[in-house]
Image (tube, rainbow, N blue to C red; front, side, top):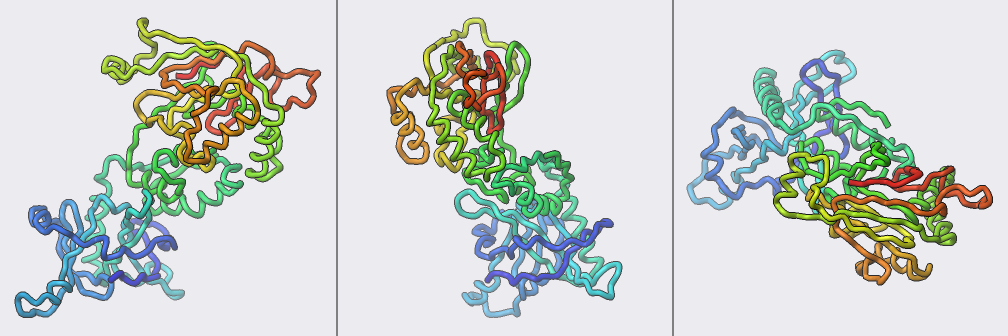
Length: 444
């Protein structure tokens, strides 16, 4: 039976201000915590043992090196009583799923300093359906200050022993993303969880592509809890440079149609994000034109010597690596180091790309008719293969050089309606940000 949630306030022990549990936190369902094995519990070293009220039951609670276990305390009954065995079934949570602990107190208007101690609240990360995570609470009720203090300090010591969990974060916010609600989403949903976990933040701030590709869902609570719990995922990142000068880091880039569309959208910031995106796509399609380019790329080699070279941080390609070159008229050129799952491409802009094997997807759309190119774009939102067109080519590469050979993308004073590029520059879409470059771009 799930526990009823208590709405009393919670405060930190070490001089912190009183904090209230986030409204999203729900009581931990008993069904998720039932232990199928008892032998492992017996082998663990016991750190503490005591009595707490959990839900409406007085429970024998045992804190071991890996888990917190409890079972209701019941009057003695005849051996073999199945109903008795069911009521006394042991439940547990693993310590690695706890991300915060607070002393639970009840506050009243007359109490100015410390409220009435009720016990301890544990904040827990639980798995939901479809790769989602949620934060839940477990209340351990005991009115003894000394008893709760011992348990509280032991929990704090355990939490401090998880080496991968961050102590501080620098947060970058794009105020224009998520229908201009990114800042509100952060302060309402993300910051309370980070504060609860004791993580210091420095906010200095577009897309949700990286989190979506990593976790399979664009769910802000899931992404936040993965950070809090110290879950580490290695991800490839690209460098963008020109003439030997580093421009920026990124995970994905589009040149041609993708870059022109973003450049148009940036000039209509007064529109809502969805309206601006749709308007820019329609206008870019109406003025669809190809770029005359020379594209050089180094095919991906997955042999052990290349992997070892990459692990050692070799800054240059092997002299024996064979560069390939293609040239012609291209409507769009995409370079993706991650699958890039997003709302317009649920399976990903580059669905076959891996997160961390050192490769990138090079996707080229050669010049074709407008109707055929539109069919290609529509395939991204469907279950059909978006690359199954004669004008689309895909390569798995380690490095790419894109060298524009004409001036169709640069500013032309006689073409007043060309709004897609600044003077002498070609527009690039890098992770949803506009990058304007006048010459060859090297991605690796």
